[in-house]
Image 1 (cartoon, rainbow, N blue to C red):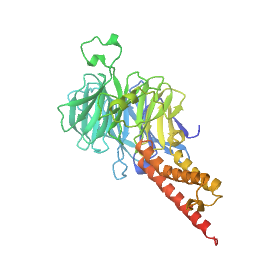
Image 2 (cartoon, one colour):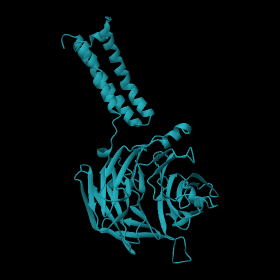
Image 3 (cartoon, rainbow, N blue to C red):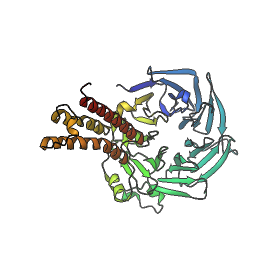
Image 4 (cartoon, one colour):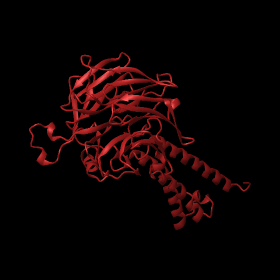
Length: 447
């Protein structure tokens, strides 16, 4: 399929990550999922011009147990160290060189024992790269200062295992747990956390327990929208549903995306725009959804109840374990299934035809001149009236106004971004200049 590029690894793939560095925007890391102590992490480079993958055996390193998450240093600046972090039994930092990868640091918060509670995931703060937040099956969330290699904060707020964690801004992060709750933490007030959603079990037979947390279904994934911090997405255990939350309206989901036919495994927000999200599931599909911020109240209830359709669907050949939208290039989405890494050209998959309404206006504008003015624009400034002439003037004015109004309406509805709106304004300005030149030429016989 055009726009889909596949790399076949030597082992099953579970975790993956994109590099942010300007000199390595098309570099990825993939982690193995082997039921052995010894696992692998491999650096893979993709050339978008030739559509080829390249690897280097010296940039493959052993990893104890399967890495539950991978992340490159969250900065585009090439002056920053070229690091990659991994989680498993511990949080590890690795330094990438041209011909090797070396272990830089192993961060262990339990100095009194040689054993450590496994880490289920982590997130590296983009706004404060010295901070890495980890979550563990021991119900804790730990924030590390990787410059000092010390614990910045350790918080215990969940009743059960913490499965995922995501930064939402400076000092603020969210986590999900086996207790079925999304909790938001603010490091400026470590004594409390805010529950903004609980994944209630609607099966009455299972809610007889007196404990409120035992009546909730576990939540496995949380992804805060870095481009629009009002939004976050959560996924439950063995659930085909993606819950979209607007933190301004806690407890009530903004949207529920339910078109997967099997359990959702991962989600990833689009960069820059923050209005699309990609979800992957055991039904072997990757779905791209459009997300629109609501105003709360009845509108929000309608959006949850609505049968939301995905904008794009991609069908793979096996259950998809992981998805990552490139953080620096809106065009590329990576997915992992079986032993394959696939890169999807998002612009080849994405299906948004709303801006074509403006193009339709550009086609309509000259039609009255062509059919009712004999190819001349002079009737537009003429005082002559009549049924067809008046209709032609009205159609010309309506289509001209529509060319300006449609981009504004689409931007207000958040179907296009501000940049796209101004691009349409610019094209309309060029179009008007062209029409005026044609009108001037039609008035002068020398032309």
